[in-house]
Length: 193
Image: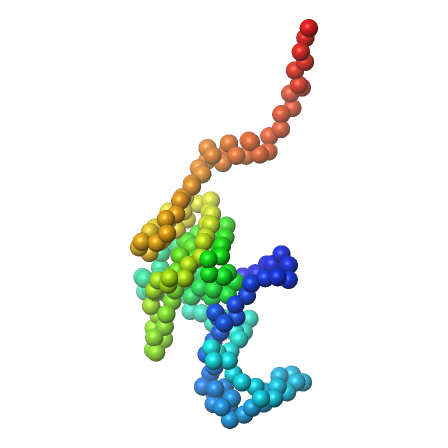
């Protein structure tokens, strides 16, 4: 997954994706005030109350066949886990911001933008819940199956903000291609006196 930014001014909320400290790290930080990184010593280091800054790799379990709550209708071959898109969207898009997914597929990014979240209990069992924090979204896909799957997942969330679905078929695509890429080669007509 790649992240692109037009300039140096980009949104990244590290607090939204912080991870809890391991037990060993938490214990060490309780008794030791110095932290060593490469050639630097950070004196009087105080751990962040929300956890540590995440690494550039995230260990996430893929969607298992038994997870009927997260699995979209039927089988969508490239469906991503809600937890993955939740981390990406929460860290890179402010609440009320705009999420654009040009290849929305099964609609995971759209349902996460609508507020679907993963919560874990003390036994690490996951549960899908709806959050009041939402983002605006635009989802596109060329596949009619993808549009159908994304629409069904959005409707299964229950009463949320209304959305519009525009589906262009072969006829609309042909008209768009003709309008966009065809040039008239006929010579302009001259008026005769």
